[in-house]
Image 1 (cartoon, protein in one colour):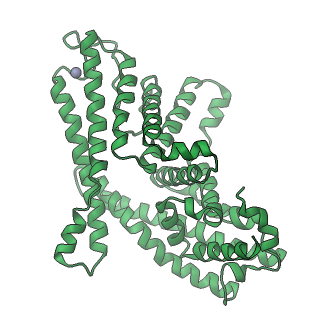
Image 2 (tube, rainbow, N blue to C red; image 1 turned 90 degrees about the vertical axis):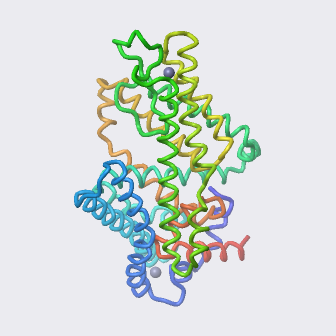
Image 3 (tube, rainbow, N blue to C red; image 1 turned 45 degrees about the vertical axis):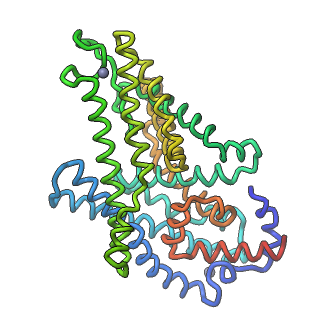
Length: 399
Ligand SMILES: [Zn+2]
Ligand SMILES: [Zn+2]
């Protein structure tokens, strides 16, 4: 619990939902207008995401058909419904609980109010389930890391060397787990090749004999250069053309404001991984599973080029996902594993994460990631900002 929450009881004496959530308006009028407002604000948040998804679908399937368009529209609708339910359940429950009991509760009103709405995730399409759970988990991890008061963690947070070394370890960990799994691995920027039972005698590397080592490495370089540049360009196109007032020169400048170091990191991370696996296999004249792990550790060094909470936490969340899948696979016949495998993990992560976002918006707004901040403010039609500011004002008076 944060230091601020110690003063919660004192700060909230004689305070109702009106003072915190909707100054100058009744519960009914606020919830009505906020519902309509949240439709508009959610659309502005999810439309660029849906457009990016449409582009990715077309890029992967190499066509732009009605089927793809319908899928993208369906997922956009699902994202909207899901977010609207969470946002309006939060504001509605906050008012309802306060009016029924006559006071604001630290945990229930602040953290647990959106819980009921988060259960809608159980009905969402797989794409929405996995992306939403992962995105919000990654964003929350940033807030959690930044808000820890420990001095050791503070030093680690600031050090590029420590961050890079930890990233190298996580990168090796993901590869180690994936190398030992039979199932298709979760998506990550490198895909370890496994030794086949009938390994081609002519080559010591694991890639196909048709590809020379140089071609294999260059292919990786080209794939990730194209992938990351396309993704960055699509992002800039959406950002640029949503700002209508820009002049031609400003538009061009805005379009070119790509995250070049991110592109470089992704390209070098993948191609260095390929290069190290080839070098190790050729030096020994035989490929081994350990080469994958050593290569994944080595290529993690490029993280120093673009140290970033999103990349780091994405690696941590991928590691957790892979660790979970690998444990399920290892104990596949165990009844406990079979039971756990049937549980809806992504909706569970989403529900807990949404409660944590609301909690951190009230107590740790300074530690939240830009994405989480924007997400919660826009999706709730800025109701979370009003509540957070009014909470802070009360705490300032009390502390
Ligand atoms: Zn109210
Ligand atoms: Zn090779």
